Amino acid sequence: MIVVITVVAFILLATLYIGYQSALPKPLPGIPYNAAAVKSLLGDIPDMLAQVSKTGDIVAWLRDQNLKSKSVISQIFIRPMSKPIILVSDYEEARDVMLNRIKDFDRTSLTAEMFSGLLNRQQFTLKTGPEWKFHRRLVQDTMTPAFLSEIAAPGIYNSCLRVVELWQTKEQLAGGRPFSATEDIFHAALDAVLAFSFGPKFPHNATEPQKKNLRGFPASEACLDEHGANRDLAVPFPHAHIDEAIESMLELGDAMEQVKSAPSPRMKWWYVKATPTFKRWTRIKDACIRREIEKAIDARQINRNSSTGQAWERCAVDRIVDREEKHAQKEGRSPDFFSAAVMDEVFGFVVAGHDTMSTTMCWGVKLLADHADAQSRLRRALFEAYSCAVAEKRAPTVEEIMQTSIPLLDATIEEILRCGGTVPIGDREATTDTMLLGHRIPKGTLVFFLHNSHSILSPALEVDESRRSSRVLQAKDRGQMRSWNDEDIHQFDPRRWLVPENKNEEGGCHGSGLVFDPQAGPSIPFGLGIRACFGRKLAYVEIRIMLAMMIWHFELLKCPESMSSYGGCLAVVNKPRDCFARLRKVSL
Image (cartoon, rainbow, N blue to C red; front, side):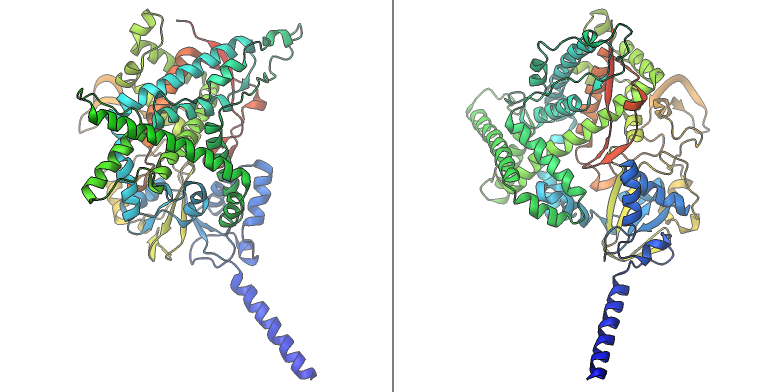
């Protein structure tokens, strides 16, 4: 009996030991990693949590891993009992994978886990294939230059006018004191994307209630002592209630941020979606979108019965309804204007467009406030380009903003995108056993390309060029791979995107003008290739209008150091932890 018990115990212990060993992280051969991580079931999680608990910035921890190994490629273990995640800090390799290796790498399954609980089958969450292509065809006409310039831009401009009016009031009330700018920028971005999605007659607005809420608010100067000792304290402006239709969209976006930080996104989504609050916000959001689709259907029918022949489309929903009807006719079916595909794509505009643009503008406010010379140069360029507006003492019109070429404005936008790092990670998943920088990458392995790391915001790490693909080497030979100067790569300087207007083949310059060159150096703000951000053209329009209007009306003054950190918080996008504004009105 004792022998039997001993044998059973041995078998149990051996099974537990074998199970423990098999559950330990399994590094891929030849790729650097943290040696301590492979000795724990939790892998790199303890080290990651220890640093993030101090800094709150997981992006900084990811960036440090390749720096520790002094390699552009490393592997981390933050998903227990799963394959390692590969980190790549190299623009050239990221560009090659995203542009040329679409059969080897696709959208990750992690993206679907993180976002599908809210965006369901929206194109962002889908693998490349027939369903993804159908979703793209459904919305592709909303990103044409004509649609963005003639239909989208006016609504975005009106949203910017409202936030200018709000900040004019706050500038007077604040009396030179700073105030939190995050909510104002987020509401302005939300209004802009709602105008794009639903048109100028959409009945709800997030900024107008904030303007009305300031009536009767005491001027800040009254709160200062005689020595002005409180001048660096932020003004606590009150928050206004907004309509539940747009509040639901914000609340649902917040739910997505909670899920992204959970150890198991699937389990977190299961819990969140079962709560009465989530269900209520979803019902309100869906009802709002359905109402706007119904308006678009009615407008199309009225236009069909009209003999005027005038354009009836006023927003993205109108364009989607038109596209769905044409698809249905071509495929011999009845149109389904309220399908999951239509509903998901419309809501995807709101979530993605709002978060990306508002976060970029928050970074822009911080960067321009801390770089007064760059801000002044941009304002002078705007005044010179819109000289008629200066002479008439008015703001530039939306037509002037969209149609006037201002190289420094384009350069400033690009530098904000590079230095802000709104989307710091480009994720891909190996769809087959493949190679990356000379290393074997098994099918199903996740790869994170770090967009605000080495070669983009810090000097490139050394790479064994023999490990690169032939395409990368050929692109370098043809001069397609430009690089930034290591001495100032970390600095915010929009002028790095300006190049001489004309160059001859020997490199000499003709003419003294400078033009904006979007290929002046490495930056990946929206991804590359067919899986690049679908709404990137809309984002550029939004940022262009908002930045021009902001710098035209206000001087962004430097805030106290306690309000000026550049720490980020990776939620849906990488948001600055602090965004305060100290304004001075610009006089024409």
